[in-house]
Length: 66
Length: 143
Image 1: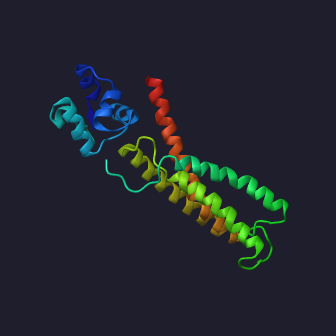
Image 2: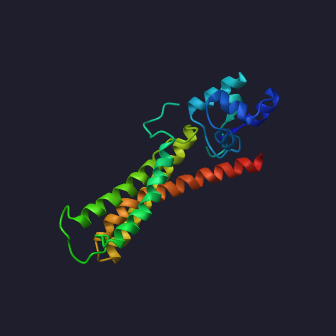
Image 3: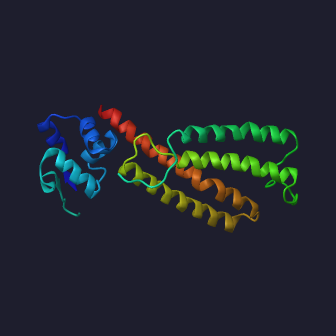
């Protein structure tokens, strides 16, 4: 699964730490999600989408082979 | 996130203190002739001095490792939870692998208890801390 959290963060001008605080996880978790090393749970993905005010599919997309 | 029961964060330090305490306890005990009953050639009977000493030192070590292994992290989230589960899976896997190997190649079954007591917890702690250390390192590298 791919995501464009890094881009969305840049648009909203918030840091990984800010986003982590808003969705109640550690900065490490946001960092590993951004670098596609960790796939978040549905709950966390929905929370992240809510922070950016966009539907889930605009932030997370399935990759070939998923 | 809703988490299952874990010990509070400070229990980790209490756990390490107990693990460290186990070392001088064993050394002092052995200097008074309390050998590990695992090393003894014959049974010494239940609740004799040697057996009680063995129970005490093992309990100190086990409680210590247990607290270290199952204390909360500073920031508990779903990724930590996943790492914890994955490390547990590895610990059980390694434990059974070592048990099977020792079952086949070692005659002395007394050491199986030692293996089973410490290997899962020790391996879990090492693997869990190593993955978290790597996470933190990759985070600090990115800045």
